[in-house]
Image (tube, rainbow, N blue to C red; front, side, top):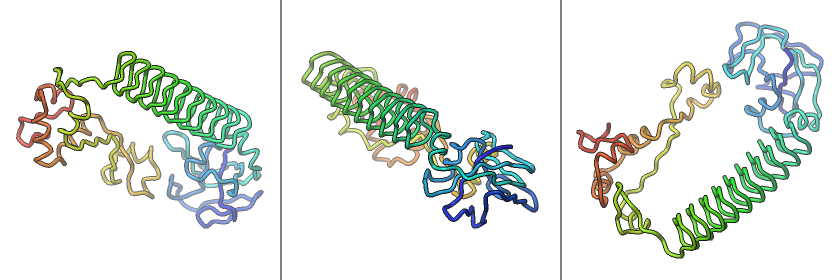
Length: 300
């Protein structure tokens, strides 16, 4: 099986010295992330485990012994490996990028210095548009982040020409606007300079968003949870081989589970703040968060 392997500048991997043209055989059982000679079938996958560093050595290899693969197929281990040849850095760039003139990796577009870009002339990462200096943009000429529109300097805008942030409309100088041409914040209409009053629990409050938020506790939900290796499933261990080094992995949990984790760790005062919010409705709160505030402990 032909594949690719990355070495440190001294041509070592985990302290073992290699040379081009030579064959190496492992004595004993092979196991992913544990024993044997590791490699990837695709060169781009190598850089999930090594820095994208031109000082490192990248070689074509042949796995001529027993081969085991991860469940995703991204990482392999073999009992016998032959180092075929060393690749120049320009060859590496051509192999890992589908487009042309890219200095990053995993780019299918052109002349990108970032990574995972399918558009052109991006200096950020994960852009499918063009001329973006931010990250995760699918539009064009954006300097912010996560924009799907064009010409946005704010962040996470799906409209166009917004210097504010989190706008799905067009031409807004305020923030969090889904309407158009608003200089105020949180507007879903047109040409508004003020800030609308918010509803809570399906009823009007007569309060601005900031006024309402001052009554709330500090709620920080995370749908990413660190799980130690002893609490991981066998499937999770197989899909996250680095867990043997890190001692665990980050698991994505549901929105309601994130709420339950926050509620369990909340102080009695913070729980009381929730219950004292204007228009508070326990049924609506449970429908959204999965938390029955009237149950003993209010945790489930």
